[in-house]
Every structure is written in structure tokens, then in C-alpha cells.
Length: 457
Ligand code: FES
Ligand SMILES: [Fe+2]
Image 1: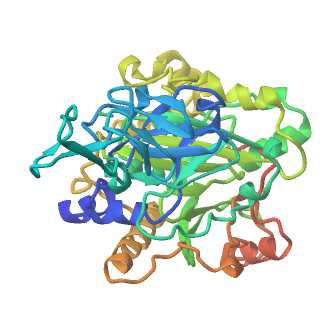
Image 2: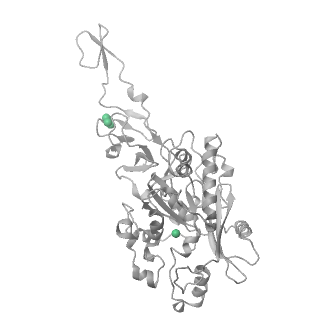
Image 3: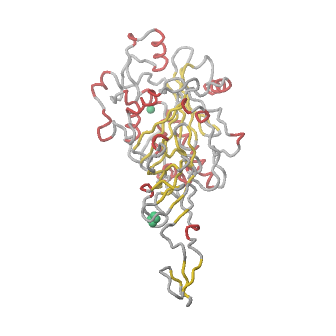
């Protein structure tokens, strides 16, 4: 449980808020590359409560500007992409990707001074003489933010000063065709979405489906038992009641967390994941869920993945679109249709009753229904919420570090430190007599901490 002040500290991200200041110190996804193909119209973007416009300049480089023209506020997303920038359709002011105003074409090219000393920008009279042209455009600095395009996503830095290095997460070192990216509109605060990743217990309930063990071959059956505990059961107590515990371990750039299931046999089963400051998780199986505030009550869940060994087939990439198809990325199951929950399915196959083909909508139901910003003064955290508690304190510490003049964790400026070998995201059987923390070290030493070639859940 948090006080209202503690909750506000972690959830509010508009301009001038403490968490908003923190978020602006990191590169954040602004759009998918597929939303802005070469030659496309400028894209209106809302990010951290700011109205912005994304476009590609003449060289195809993405550029992010404040949406409202510095002249008299017209929306630049209706503008013309030409002459090395974006031109407002109201009076033709032209901006480049750095926010410089290159032209104010309506302004006089000559200023005329009357002999009597009166300035005039009207037609010259017989006793007038010309002086220098208007230089007003040189004094305009329109809001403009640096962009970087990687792995099918356009990222932006909205903070002050020199941006940090772009983080070298392994996905960003892959060839483009080994990566995949999509996004999902979420009608709740970003923290609810991200806490859904950190809450590993829920996978044994919310996402649980009964499987027909007899229909599986022996290897699949063994895998199902390891992965889902008692996959032939469908019970309100979950597949492994009372056998799971959740733990966490502080990391230099966030939090490593685990769910450990006692199987009663020699070997336990474990799911391992990493919260990376300030608003993403690498989840068991290796996908990245990056929860980016649109404003305080809506966010985009960017879903990124990669495969180290092989290109991601185009059909697999497009296969993700069935839940929230482009160009809106609005989920088909949503609050207005009660997430397509089916009570018959709930009785027979699915714990949640939300069809398994809409797996991520099961998460949406759980994270949106607490309300646009969950009232955390009313929650009651228990032992299995240990990782949630730890993640909140990691986030709070980063916010306070920034306020006290220290660089927050995971803002990387030293190229030698721009590597993240300690990200662990996998699941499977824990070797006998091994602590999960030691198992993580073994995985890292073997270069196998971040799984990429297994299904995400
Ligand atoms: S409002 Fe944009 S040029 Fe005047
Ligand atoms: Fe989930």
C-alpha cells in the first residue's frame, strides 16, 4: 500500500513532475517505424503528456517537434514536408529537425525606414530607404527532440542537455530482420502495465489454460508439466496452490526477479525476468514490454523481441497484429466489450475466460480494470508481491537521485558501461541444490541469460 503522495510520485509523468523528469532522462519509444514509412504524412504523437509531431526530413531521418507552431499555434502535423523540414500550412513557417525556423515567408524581405525615423513595414514612400531584411526567424527555437531509429522503433530523448548513449540492449545490436516490434494501446497509467510484468505470480492464474495432456507427445507433455505445473487441472486455486514464491534482487540498472515453484521433486521450476529502469521489463522468454506514458491515464505497451539465431519470419511479425491491428493499435478485446470474456470458456478451458488468442488482453483486463490510475492507498500487498515492492523502491530511488543531483541508474554515458550482460529472462528447471541467484550467474557466464528463441509465456 502507498500513500497518495507516494503513488503520485511514481505515476505522474507530465512536465514538471518528478517521475516525468526521470522519464525524460532516458530514450523512449515515440512510434513504430511502420507508422512513418518514407513519404508518409507527419504523425501526431502524444508522449509524456506532450503534443508532438513526428516526420521524416528530406534525408528520411525521423524528426520530432512540438506539435504547435511557434507562430500562432497551428498543428504542424497538418504541415507540408518540404525544403528540408516541416512547413506550417497557416503562414508557411518552415522548421528543420533541430527546431530552427528556416523561413518565415510572409515576412517582408526588406524593411523600409522613413526619413522621419518612423519604422514601416508597409509600402515604401518616396522619402523611405531600405534597411536589413527581417531576422526574426533566427530567434525562434521550436521544441525539437533527438530521434534514433532501431529495431523497428523510433526513439526520442525529451530531456535536457546532451542525451545519454542509446542503450545497447542486445536487441539493438541485432540485424533489423532478427527483430520484431508492435504496440498496444492501454487505457491506464504506465506503472500498472509495467507492474503486470513484475507480478510473476499472475501467470499461474490469469493466463492459465487447461491442456489436454493425452493429446501431447511425451516430450511436449513433460514440457507442459514443467511449464504449467498441473496443466490438466482447472481450479480456482491455480495449478500449483501455495507452491510458488516470488523474490527479487537489486541490479545496477533495475531489478532481477524470480518466481520459484517447489515441485516436491529434486528440482524446482523457475521463471526469471528483469525490470530495467525506468519503464520496461524483459520478461521470461526474452520479450521486452516497454510501457510508455501517453499521458497519466493512457500508455503504449511496446512489445519488442528478437531472435539471435535467425530472422523473424514476416508472418510471425504480422501475426501479432490480430490483437491490436495497425494503424490504430487499439485492442479488439477491450473494456467496452468486457475483453470478450466467455463464461463457457472459463468453465472448461481458461482460468480468465478471455480467449487465449488474445493473450495480452488478459493482461489488459487485469491492468486496466483497477482504474485509470490504480488507487494504491487501498491495495493490500502480500508475500508474493515482494518484487512489486522492490521495484517501486528502485524507481523511487532513481527519482530521488535525480532530484538530489545524481545521475539516475541506467542513464549511460560511458561507452564501456553501455552493455547489459546481467539482464536475465528465461524459464525452466532449476538445477538441483542451486539458488536461483547462482543459477542466474551461471546463465550469464554461459551467455544464456537472455533467452530469445522460446515462446514468451
Ligand atoms: S501559425 Fe504556423 S506559420 Fe503561422
Ligand atoms: Fe501477463
